[in-house]
Length: 79
Image (tube, rainbow, N blue to C red; front, side, top):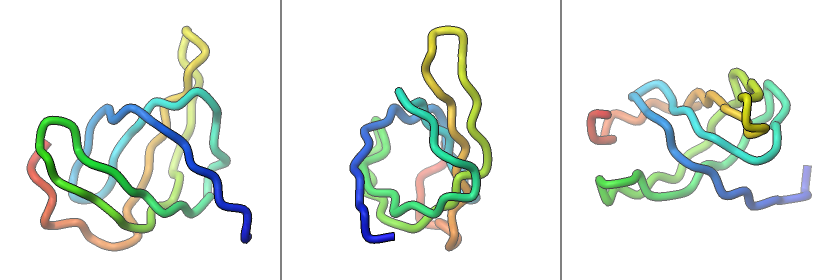
């Protein structure tokens, strides 16, 4: 709502429907974000809206987050 934040995350995996990331802080389920970045090893840039579908804390205190693309991303390379 007008307060943009930039968060750096590590990509875990992806598909045409969404992707998962690891973060140092949780994000509330249902939050809509603007996802921007480059898929590791592929050199494919991505910029699209996505919704946080789930968020869990791992044993090391980091958070694994699942995002669903708001729009189909059929041009992404296969994971």
